[in-house]
Length: 328
Image (cartoon, rainbow, N blue to C red; front, side):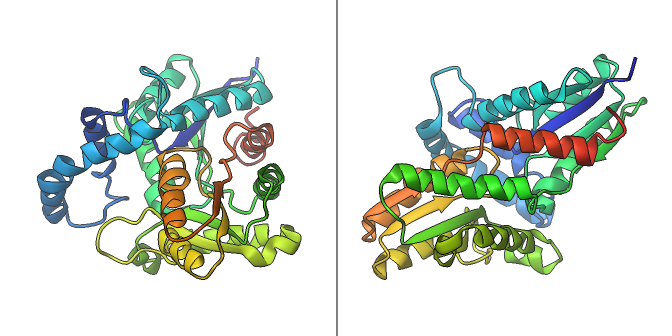
């Protein structure tokens, strides 16, 4: 009988609940990651513990509460990732065990690796759910897996996916999601914005390929958008702190568009594999509010690919062709 392999789908993570205590615990783990914050620990720990963890948890908890489900439920990101895993599992068959983990919070990477080991699985493929590679996301997942296994005597064989930003099925699914959304809206956008999570400019200057991969994704999408290609533009959201982040900024771009009379905007977030705080609250609620206040008349967000069949089929295909080849 062939040995069973493991496939681990990993996303960023969320607090266990939309309250300040849970958010503080989550931010403590997230913002202690050297991949995320590259400042000297002597400087950063004072800022983090003296200011951020005192102020930000309550504010973030309010934002999470806007997108959270019923009491006792999990965050949207985690619920959707579980749905993705279930659909990928149905496509992989019995020779592969699919599990979910979050880089920060629960369900954790160490727990997933322990479960694989308990099942006797000694070959594990890791698929970070980040289409575009960045050290702060994809490489951090690598770190998280190796840290989880650091003290294990019996290590599994490991394979990691780096990115899938130019995968044809991924590009096709994104373009189709735009076309389907416009068909249901009843209005044609003046602009279609592809908003990616931001990254400090200095990280790119040090060699991070993230911006190049975001631009490549947008260019591939533009080639398939036909007459709408000229309306399509790239922006970056979610900047934090005083330093320069990748530009153009999503919020500033939306404000400028409204002032220019381009009042109908559709936004898509190709860098997110599942809807989360950054899409459901930052874009669908806050960005929409600010755009309408600036003079916009129509604003809508294309949902992430989430657990759509074409998306889950693509993830399963990637796992088969780039990670599990020779193992199944």
